Length: 351
Image (tube, rainbow, N blue to C red; front, side, top):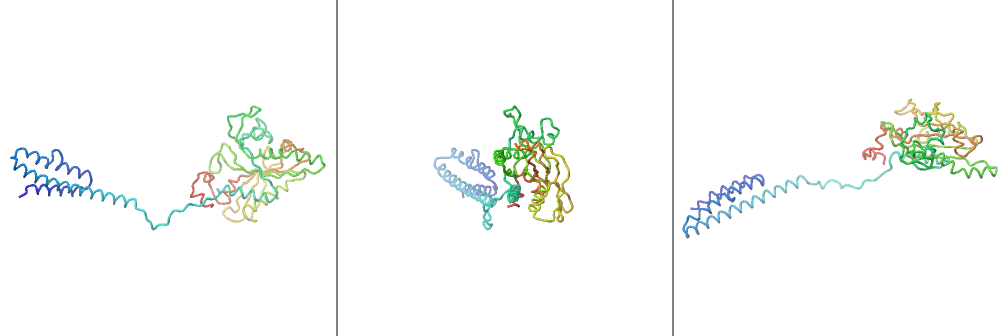
């Protein structure tokens, strides 16, 4: 009778009960470790006669092989179970449609800028673009806003740690109005040639859309925002022209004739007289509410002079509006910061 059979049976049972590799290694140590039961059997061979040692050793080796076979079988079973669990956890549902590359689209503010340029382009306005880092003269002084003028506090801006040729700090432009001055001065030669020939000066019609910067941040303001300035200068351009042009723009931009404009007296250093432009819709969720959308007015004679033109001969109007605010009104967005968060869930609505 083989008295090692129960030992082999117990080892096989312990291995089967092992639920994890660590439990299995503990069970292995009980039978095959340095102080294990099989090791004890081998150590006891020293007390036997050579013939008994040979016979007993054969039985012990056979038992050891059975135990090792059971151990390896359980190791493979645990590894297979672990693999199945991992595959189940990482399983892919191949019946789902594949992920496709999404289509891009313009940012809602970019859509608005393109729309503004198209509408004013149809009225004969050029589009001017220029530097976002400006000199003090173009940002303020040329616009009838000299040093220490209280109106400068209305346009707190960011300054760059660099000075211009006159020793003044450069700034991130607080509005795109400097482009009105730059554009007019760039066309001064054409004006002079026309006057020399006794001809009427070619009118200046230009809009200047672009990024601007001010120290301001809340649900309706951002440190970086967009602005679009407009300018029309000629020998006989009146406030009436301003009302017609801007009224036509608003109706075409919002695609409705059920819209009313109101010009409310205000103050800007670069225009005189000046007016805030409000609009009211005759229908929809904003019905009956007056909403400010722009500032406007007749260009101040000092600004016309800084254009390089004679204010006694040339007159015109200017306006400035916020494409960000127009975008909010057009699409029903109530928080300006959504335009700059970069959330694709929001932006994908405008594709």
